[in-house]
Amino acid sequence: GSATVVMDQKQLAEIDGPRYITRRVTRSLTVLPAEQRQQSDPSTDSEPTRKPRIGQKRLHSVRRPAGASLQSRHRFPSTQASTFGLIQESIAHNLYFLVVQAILWNQTHGKQARPVFLALIERYPDPKSLSKASLEELTELLRPLGLHNIRASRCIALGICWDKDPPTPGRQHRRKGYPRTSLAASADDAYEIGHLPGVGPYALDSFRMFHRDEMRGLAKDWLGTGATDEDFEPEWKRVIPLDKELRAYLKWRWLKEGFIWNEENGNLTAADEELLAVAARPSDER
Image 1 (cartoon, rainbow, N blue to C red):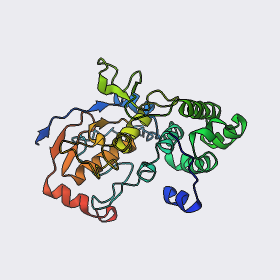
Image 2 (cartoon, rainbow, N blue to C red; image 1 turned 30 degrees about the vertical axis):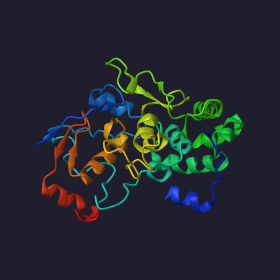
Image 3 (cartoon, rainbow, N blue to C red; image 1 turned 45 degrees about the vertical axis):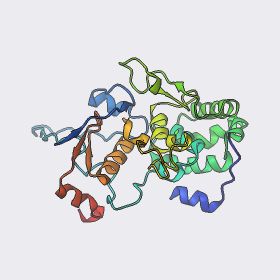
Image 4 (cartoon, rainbow, N blue to C red; image 1 turned 180 degrees about the horizontal axis):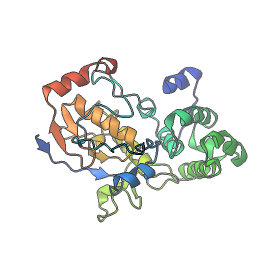
């Protein structure tokens, strides 16, 4: 169901605030060449490519194994930290917030989308209120993000569909092209939010990583707190997203467990002591 959620200012402020292991993982999409992948990144801007000056030789850097570097656009916090800094960590218990956040972050930088997201969930704290939103008012609210007409219509459609057919444990829906387009779909490729308008690979990855175990009653959170099944494995360990921030989070999360995670295929390599020691330091001391 979708009980009404009343957000006070304090709650809103808290939100704003080489040994390989082969495992079954699911990709967001078929992996594209690097140039196309940068253009299709669903939630973050791509880094500009610097062209060499006339007469200047182009330098070719040595490619390091995926996941072996602590440097990324999103600076890694220490592995001793309790959180990475993604907004999903602060709204993980509210599926509605997670889905709306994913829609707003699509083709928009998080810093730009965050204040709009906070304003939206304050005005429309649940799917029913969003379903009854004025298209004109919602469009104006979303104007700073661009594509505001499309986003507004999509959000209202989301609210209407959610109110009539809310995500329910045990009822799964396949989403065309997710998690992989080159292989036949299996029963494991259906998800509880797959029928909702506006839900794409980024939203599905985020849902699986931060909320699905809780929804299915397998654990109290995405880290497996309270899980009683001795064979339980958190859903986030089986996700291979294309979004840069979600990839950065998984590299950090796996390092906390002592492994280097390969963002292309999900393979794990035992991290050496030197890397683990560096990762445990505060980011400004590396």
